Figure 1: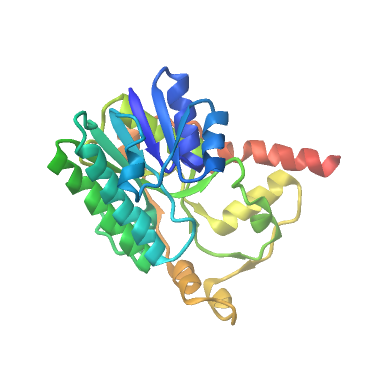
Figure 2: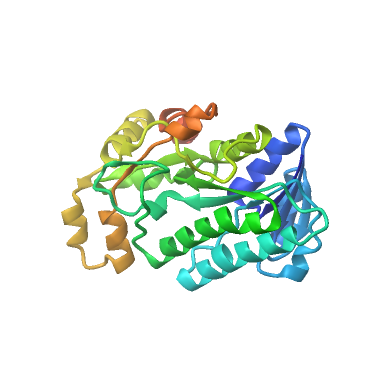
Length: 299
C-alpha cells in the first residue's frame, strides 16, 4: 500500500514508521527542509511541499491512500482555516484530478469539535458543538473530508484525536508541580494515534465514517495528577477548582472556554472495529516517562 502523509509531523512520523515496518510504502510531506530530514531519519521517503500549494503537491507520488495530518502550528483561526479547510480541499482536489487517484483519504481531526458537555460522554454520533473559531474550522474540515472525495471517486474518513501525549509530550512537570485545575483528560498515546490510522487503512475499515481515537479511560485531572505524583515518588500537587482558576486575572477568553469545556470521549467504535491499543490507558502510556523521571531523580 502506497500512503502519502501530508503534514508528516508528530503522529505522521510514527505512522510512516509503522507502515514501513509492515512492508508498505509511505511518503512523508513537510513544508520545511528540516521536517523532511526528520522523515528521512525515520526511514521513509520525504517530499518537500506545502499542502496549500497545488503545484508543489504534484511532486508527491501517486498513492493508494492520503492521510492529511497537517498542523496550523498553534496559530489562530485564520491560519487554521488556511491549512485545515483550504489545504485539505486543495489536497483532495489535486490528488483526485490525477490519472491514478487515491482510493481513500484519512483526515485527522480533534475531539475539540464536541465543545462542552458538562462531563457527559460523547461519541461519533454526538452533535458537534464547537466553542471556538478554531474548532468551528475543524468541524467544517470534517464535512469536507467526508463529502468532497466522493466527487473524485474516492472515500473519506475522519479520525478524531483526543489529547496527544508520548515521547516529547509527556508534560510531567505541568502535573507534578501544579496547581492542577479540576476537569477531565481525554488522551491517546502517539503510537496509538498512528496505529489506529494504520489499522483502518490496512483493514480497509470506516470508509465515509468518523472514528474517535481516544484511549479506554478519560481521567479526572486531579486523580491523574495524584497518581502521577505517587508513581514518581513526589508530593501530590496543589489543586484548584474551576471557579478558583477563573478568578485569576490572567485567564484569556480562549483559556476560559477551555477550562469550562468538559466531556468524556468514548472509544467504543474503535474497539468494536477491532483495534488493540498499545497503551489502553495513561497508566501504561506514562510508564516509560515515569521510569525515566525516577532514574534522573536518583542520579
